[in-house]
Image (cartoon, rainbow, N blue to C red; front, side):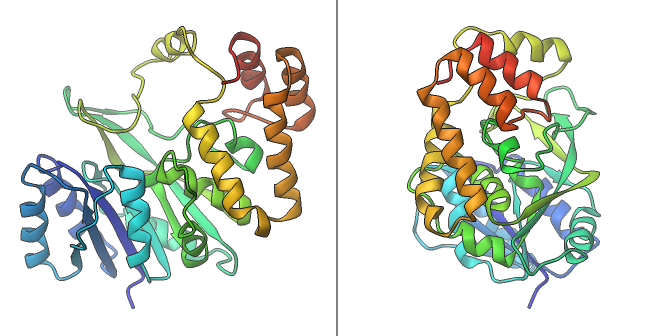
Length: 303
């Protein structure tokens, strides 16, 4: 059995896919299997996949006729094909440094895998239009479920390696999903833990066709976006996904975690002033800070 399953969801990625596949083939850890599922590409993506699969038998093209028209569901579908002790998501357009798998495997294998567990690393931001490589893609490092609930997302999916116990939980897909990394992050902090690996192990490519949100070029950009009109504390899609996750897993949640979710849902019943005091008394944080979350509660509607 291979040590690591790599799970790649593709869609119209022919332009960048060869470079990413080459970076995987060149990994210092060789004991892996790459499963690729395409979501109905209309460019040359499928031809690229078939070519590389013919060159390296560790690359498996999953052709099951299913299409989701959703990167989140496409990634989560791949969990059904994974059986290795550890799995990792992989975007079609990034570039992995050659020690990414080895570094993350060494960390997760050294930890307690008798419970659901994930580790996640950082990355350089690679701006495709300018060829600039700088900064870091992961700036949020949650340590508890109360750090996750107001994130409007999860830890970056392509940065996460997780064990078989966490994979089994994530196979129970909620009816409403915002993104695959949101599901994995919620599951890790609900049933186990997540550990940060303080290394930048890939080039996180940003270009005009990326599915995920923008990466800010400067602190001024972040400030401008923070005060943009129409912003809410909670993104409605992610709030619905949290509700759906809770409904799917409520019966088996640890009691303390269940109470945290139930307490979180009470925010929708409160006025703005009560929500501020709720943050302060309830131990909720955003970007590791209660102050930032309180400030958002003051200047924005909840939903």
